[in-house]
View: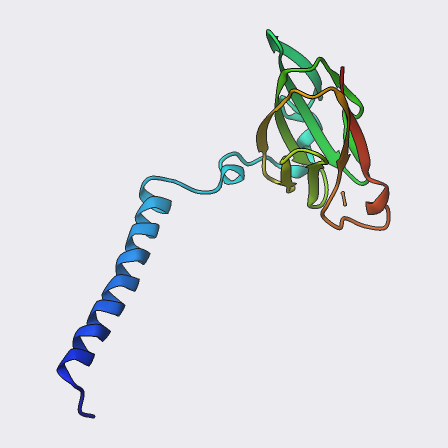
Length: 155
Ligand code: CUA
């Protein structure tokens, strides 16, 4: 096959760029360990109840208008549910699933996380506006999926 010289140059450049990008991504992932946030901490999903902090799920005040919520998700509930916090609070959620993949979406905010068994999900949100925020599971998790909901009440 006869190829024009400029064609060869463009082909070499194109493949060079693809290989370059793959090397950069590979270096970031494996050498710098830049994986997705949920990838960092693993947990045995069979023993969630025995492993801290999930052996004691709940809300803890950790500072001035700063809270930590340790939450387990299971078919078909959020534990704890009906979380009450004062307006202006920053909440650090630490979550895991005890069975299948669930979703954690808070209507009216951009909070939206996938909570998978075997992984610890961490996400932080500040709630400035008082009101009742609907919390929904947005990953199909079984026959009671549509009933899996709770509230965050900001006072
Ligand atoms: Cu949990 Cu859908």
